[in-house]
Image (cartoon, rainbow, N blue to C red; front, side, top):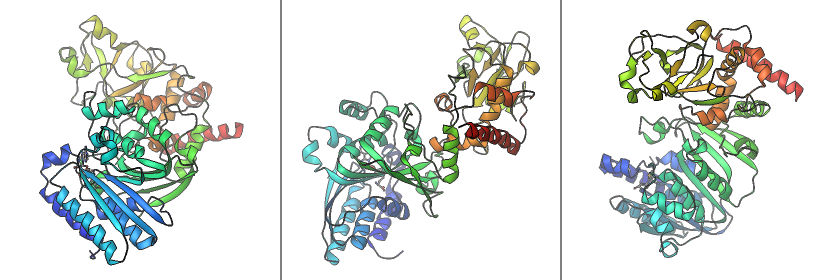
Length: 504
Ligand SMILES: C[S@@+](CC[C@H](N)C(=O)[O-])C[C@H]1O[C@@H](n2cnc3c(N)ncnc32)[C@H](O)[C@@H]1O
C-alpha cells in the first residue's frame, strides 16, 4: 500500500472497523467502503474544468468517499478548488473522520492546491429536514457522494415521518439519504450512491423510485454482483449498485458496468435511457441491463404482445400460511385431506406429491375460513417465491395437473406464486405453454434485468410480458408438465420470438 491520501484513509478505515462494536455497527449500518470501491465511486461523477466544487458526503464514516474524490481532483483537475461537507452521527467515528478531512486539506496544500472541509456531527435526516436545515448544511452542492446506512424504516419511525413531511415515502434509511442527498443538489449537480439494488423494483419502493427518477436522470450504473465481496458482511444476498445521476439532467445514454466484487475488473456497455426505464412503465422499474445479451433480451420482451391481464390470468401468493393452521397440517395425506403443496414439491416442471420434504403434505380443513384457502380442482402454474442459491434460474415454474393429481381441491403454501383464472384453474395447454415460457432462459435473463434478489414476487410476475394466448397454447399442446432440457425449452421459445419479430 503506497503512502497517499487514500491509502492513509484506508488504514483509518481498517483501524476504526476493528474497534466498532457489532451492535452499533448493525444499528448504524456501518459498512465502510474499501479503497478500491471508493476509487470506483469517486471516478463516476463528471468534473468541471475549473471553479469551486461543493461536495457533500452524508453518513461519511471515516471519510473514504470524500478522500477518494479529493485525490482524483488533485491528480486530474488542476483548476478546481474543493469544499467538502461531511455528516456523521456516530461520535466514536468522528476523530478518524476529522483526521481524514485534515489530511485532505494538508495533502492539497502540499501541492499548492486548496481543499476546505467541514465536519458536521449529527443526524443527516434531522439536519436536512429540520428547521436548522439551511444553517447546518450549506448548499446546494455540486456532488453528493454516499454509501448510506441501510435499515428498514417502519411506519412509526421518526425518520420515515420526517421524509413523509418532505413529501416522499422512504421504506429504508438509504432511500431517505438518497432523497435528501438529491434535494441538496444544485441543477446539474450529480448524485453518486452505492446502495442495495432492492429499490430498483417491487412495490415498496415505488413512490421513492418515482420521486428519484423525476429528480435525477441516470448517467451510469455499476453493479456489484456480490455485496458480501465488497463489504465482507456475508449473508446478505442482495446485489449492490452504484448509481450516478444528474439533477435536471438530459436523458441520454446510460453507461452500465458490472463486476463481481470490488477487486476484479468491470465489464462495460452503453445503452439508451429507455432500456433502463421503459417509457410506458407505470411502476418505473429500473432495469439494470448488464450487457448486450441483456439489451437484446429486453428488446425481445418488449415485442411480446400480451400482459397477464390480456391472457385473462392473475397471479397471487399461495393462501396457506402453515404456522397459522398448525392444527390442520398432516404429515402424510389421509382421507378427507387436501393435498398441501410446498416449493419442495416442485421438480422439473411437475408437482411431485406426496413427497418426503420434511413438510406436511396434507391439509385437513377445519373451518369455513380454511376452506377458502383451497383452490378448486383445475390446472395451476406455480412459481417458487424464493429460488435456492444453487438453482440456475431464479424463476422456477411447474404445473399442478389434475390429469395425474386428480380433480381435487388443492392447498398451495404461501412460499408459492399461483397463476389462476379468476381464482379457478387455467386451460391445460395454456398452463403447459406458460410453464415453458416462464422456465425459459429468456424470461430468467429478463427478470435479472430488474431484480437483484432471489425472491420472485407476484408483482414481478405481473410486470412480465407474454406471447399471445394462442401462441402459448401452441407451445403447450400435446405436452405433459415434465420439462424438456433447458436448451430445448430455449429453442422453442426462441422460435416463438423469431416468428414474432418477423410479424413485427
Ligand atoms: C454504510 S456506512 C458508510 C460510511 C462511509 N460513507 C463509507 O463509504 O465508508 C454509513 C455511515 O453512516 C452513519 N450514519 C448512520 N445513520 C446516520 C444518520 N442518521 N445521520 C448521519 N450518519 C449516519 C454511520 O455511522 C456510518 O458511518
